[in-house]
Image 1: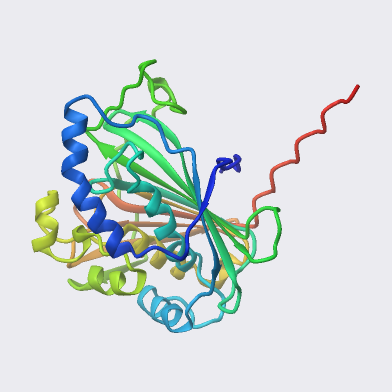
Image 2: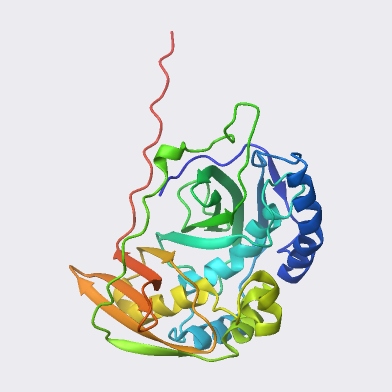
Length: 327
């Protein structure tokens, strides 16, 4: 995971934004965004700004509720997925800016990677910084990454205790700029190859995803995206039933790994296809050389829902730049 510098321009928000209000803003802006895109107008580069929230204190009751719903142990350390929950609204606020080139509504969460260098605890005071990077063409549309870093207040400018990179895909949206390529984008030749046929492994377990799973996770996380809440709210977005939050299933896989992950690890998740609610999914948890791989799929389907890897140990901090020669 790159530790590239965040934008120089930084805006301090007065507090963590409400995800409900952000989604309402995204819904209202969706029609205007689509009309501008059809007319060939609208932004085609990412906002060169980072958002910061300081003085954030985790809520112990919310932590307990999160631990219960994803199956984490009742400890005072913050699960890596709970830290994502704390940081997610700050990143989402960037995606509803007028100068963000993709509509929040309709973005598909395709991957997530977290580096945790040290465990955060419920009595820590935290600061969150988030920004967008790597606007890239994709065979199905346009891809973008949202980066969030979380530090303890007073930790200084060293590597963050937690960094997450969420990758989103805007299907069917192909941006063009004056130079025919979005700023900061990879070329088409750099796109990932088409997916390989999925061969289901031998399961080691199963999860039952109840019909109200999306609503229960939304109540804890604040992520009230309508595709997760009910069949009625998901149908306008092309789903016949509600689908499970990707970060719920990824967090449940991380909880299955449990204390074996240690306090420092890299946790990556690839969301290959949505898991419908309700459903019962098969799970394969494999361990090799102390690292863990979890695969989740519906029996009889030709595609996995989720692939998670948990690699023990902290990633090395980026090397400091060499000092410039002086005359």
